[in-house]
Length: 124
Image (tube, rainbow, N blue to C red):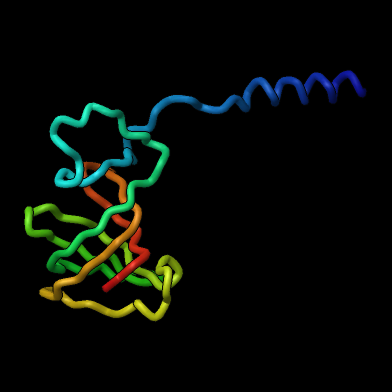
């Protein structure tokens, strides 16, 4: 019976190998205007990229703990900014915004489905 348990345990270890394939659905990127055109260094896809964006709110989607504001910067880039109290460095920064407001945000960014997303940790 002990041999059977050991055999099952060894099978489980073989099947639980970590998948090392690269995911393409959530690639970390820096905004276009923060990367020099002649920069040839590779971006580490595991490290978050902190960005600062100032732009106009063009749409809002309410969520469970906050909302996602679509923010359009002066260059025409659209960012999907997730704003919630738990993600902010200072919860007192939380405020409701409306379409047409201009906001300054800072947070970790990534690209998903050709959209630029930001988990906001500073809202001004």
